[in-house]
Length: 421
Image (cartoon, rainbow, N blue to C red):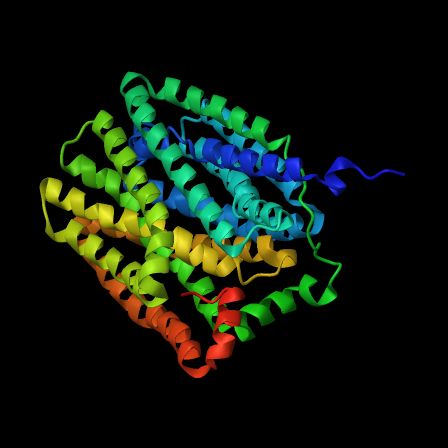
């Protein structure tokens, strides 16, 4: 009996997978509502504090489904999980057309949380598996991750420009257009072909939660610190994302300018994605990690202490840093992971980030409402310096020590297995 096409994909199938994943990620990231989401929710009667609570609920839904979705992707296949996520994404935006209360928006966030938990990390795992089946080099993996992040950022930026214009005309029209894009996202996901890989369950040692814990807690020390760093630096960025629109409002900017600034921020992330690979190759791992560790503090303190357009300009450092860690840290994580648990670990990383936002998001929102943006940004700047000391410096040390202690003959082999530098 002949195998199904998805059981034995051809080179053409895998190459088409790459293009489809790029298109899927572009459509998923093409979010018209994001650059004006705070004004949109405020138009429905929500306060800034309620908006942060709403986002904490969204993060809680993702925490609930993130790890199971990663296991399902490793156990039953990437494609089916991506398609289910695409369906939930389309339902969420369809419902947003009719949500005019806090309760209705909770339902929207619940559907979006389910969608994001299904799609988050699964598209990356599918891209990595497809390229591995094509016998792509590690350099190709890095380039593909950089290109994926670049496309996502360009999608966010393009959507920001259009979303800002549509918001001036009508919030309802903007949400309707977003619903149509969600349908396009689902349509791109359906033709994907499952890439060949080692399925969770075929190797009992790697199919259990205990084995994943052993890998992260007792395996490669660089892998462990990278896994810790990714969600924490993502938290630094997301706090700014949810404060920056109020930051612009305080400066009296119009919604159209919101779109332009959001586009500029996304373009900054896209440029940083392209620069990240070059920075790591030319400057080395230590310089790259040092830059990633210090840029958030510079951006946050600059926003807190500088007024007008100077503060807005300095905020771009935070978004440039986002592009750097999305390439350098995410690639460092994925090239150290077995294919059988790649989606699971990526989902756990995202889960950790979401759980962190559940704990910190409402606090940041309440602080911003009670103490003001400048005080809140200063506190976040201090926390980013603490993060540099307790997380980034140990990561840098874990990169340096093997380079100093291993024989020169084996240094190349360690780099071949994914050590930074």
